[in-house]
Image 1 (cartoon, rainbow over the protein chains, first blue to last red):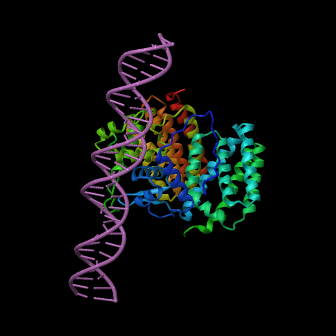
Image 2: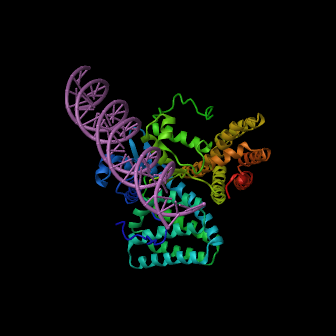
Length: 227
Length: 227
DNA sequence: GACATTATGACTGCATACAAAATTGCAACC
DNA sequence: GGTTGCAATTTTGTATGCAGTCATAATGTC
């Protein structure tokens, strides 16, 4: 898993040099969302180094980046621990997410170009195809991509960053929630409504349905949390 | 400068073990907000290590944390660069901040205890004292503390974190804006209105005045930005 | 048998060493 | 005059070593 991503060939674009610690950071984020490293677990440096085939320096530095993002917590003399979300944390994050996506929705309807909206719609359609094929992992990734893309329509980098920070913290819960027998059809229907509001450029409606969608998502994954 | 902070003695509190990289991170944040390391500047590791009297490991790891927070940018093979805010970045951040503080204001009026509100009012009064004494640095710090405290009243950790992340990115602009001859009295008056709304537990009013305050703050520091 | 104490092992934090890449300076060339 | 090629130096990225700290198991005492 983790392959078959949505990377563009970027023929003429700027050349990208990547450092080892960046790759490690990406891998660690994936491992956390997929539960390979469970919430609350300590990160054993030497063990992970052996597994990933890197030395401790790039791993430690990658972990520090995740700490800054709030994905892990640094405990002195005890290393890094994957942050565990309580029910309240989840609710808190969702409240913030609602505010952010609401703002994003309103801005998107105001400033996005038709082409950009069309691109999101295309993403949505691809997601629907995956739904039709019952490809859960692909659906999950495209679902996240759609939300990220809608926020990106706002053309507000700070908003994108804040949104991504919160999303990455909740991604694990969503990941396991995605595997369960929740109301998949319901979520899909909400997405249809979202896209309709976006195409109509009705910011208020989009903000409202995004909020609703988040509330219901909360309901869907609620049972998976401690306390 | 940087001394005379508002740290509690924490006599009975839990013992705090601090690592070197944490201290370095704190120092770096201060250096960035105060412009000791200017926006857009590369961070020279060996030079900073010599200045701070630490080796490269803790410095690099601290820098990685700041990168995760979005304060600096990691450029492969070229180290870390202090993120530079364009006018648009500033506007973007403010839009998000408005959404966050609006949410915080509404929540605060709903859930905060009277004692907690009283503590914020006390902070506000101390800030007013500093204003009366024209102590700009102390005023600046207390001003930030008041905003942080109001957000903290919401009892929403995710909100606090998101707010802090954005605040820390704008802190430098505010710092230099604080030194200039802006409309200090106006800002102070807005703070009075804020506190009044808080004491009245009028969430909508508080959200509105927080938004206004942010807009005007933007006006005040607008001229200090590139482009 | 339960509890306090000590000893052992594992792990993190920091420092340092080495390798690879980039910046700088200079000279040659078009 | 400006650009290009090259070499020297600086700087970053990665690996490794060592000391301090924490967790756990073993030991001894009541």
